[in-house]
Length: 501
Ligand SMILES: Nc1nc2c(ncn2[C@@H]2O[C@H](COP(=O)(O)OP(=O)(O)OP(=O)(O)O)[C@@H](O)[C@H]2O)c(=O)[nH]1
Figure 1 (cartoon, helix red, strand yellow):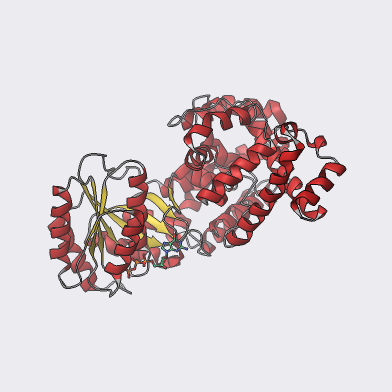
Figure 2: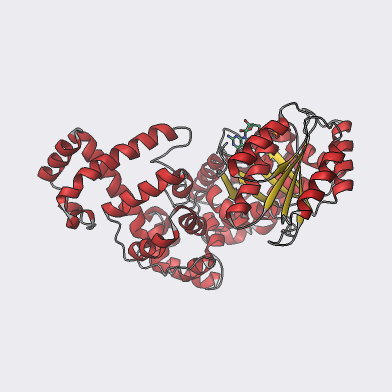
């Protein structure tokens, strides 16, 4: 996701400003101009960027900066707040309720990923125990119904559509009626897309909306749409009552800033993002963790959510217990590799760890990375002869030369490869050791994790250089006190944003 580079650019601009001996208006302006450039390059709409710059100038008091307060922190907090404000329209979207029928209509341009997203949305809810159903009211694109049918069949979701009927309104109404009778609680209507924002598309959309009376209209937008995002989103908003946005293809080379613009144009929140072509490459969108990640800080609550998603329920308490004790053993790594190979999204899990962005499994190189994981597992399989103490220990000293040679021989791999596997283990163990001492949150209590993070935990998570900037442990404790214990850490995340480690 190119948006991630935005965090790096912002951090660099802040660093340059922090390096200046005297912070005057000129230095502040230079810093803000640099940030503005970064935002524009990420395709955030010009007007939004300009407003943001004006707001930051209003908030940031030059006297405070001159007095030697932590300039970086003050400005970064202002940027964090402004970006959050941009992405948060101030009111949540309509949220369907399980076991109560809701009709959700999807709209968007052709190729935006609408049909794929309909299925992802249905599948996401189905996994949570809902009874979703899909209606294909796209009679414009030949093959649209086949695509929906294929996706729906794969996910075992009931669907409705027609090869013969050319009236999308009729199909939509029939489909909705049918699934209401079948007591489906989430009836999803996919509508036609066009290449451009044509009058005919909007008229058809309006008619489908009028006939089916959706509880929620979701606007699906391709993240690579760039500066056109604002106008496009606004055009849709003017024809139907868009209530939420889903931004797709966030995994690609898109700059992604259009997402921010779409929120501003529709005054509706982004509720999910699409991060790949597969059914489960779909993430709930939360503003603060997103901006935290954007600015280079990890996303602990997202990470914990992912653990709940990736690790089978019966293994979760045990895994979290071990992690909280600081015991990341080879066996844990092996078990997690197993889970990952079953479920796939390791990149998503790791990208949420501070300072650890999917190094093991970079996006676009999944096949290669999966082969690597399988190779590691074969080597680890041959370690069973080494006995329980080795697999269940987190002491790297146990991996001595003779052991490494035995493992290489046993698995038919080269010494270099065994060492590489072990280096990977050490790297992971180091990162996961930061979980040590964390109070384990129960499912649905993710924010508790944030509250339970004390300064000591935070100091372990922060890169040393950054900790120094804040004034060491003392400075950090003060800062946390100022924030108040009840404040969420994600907000702080924005203040600490990395990128210059
Ligand atoms: N990489 C990536 N590809 C996606 C994502 N979402 C959808 N796609 C792909 O984008 C292409 C277009 O998606 P569709 O779902 O067919 O688009 P659509 O908007 O329904 O198109 P129409 O039905 O013609 O309006 C397909 O190849 C999808 O696999 C995503 O989040 N990431």
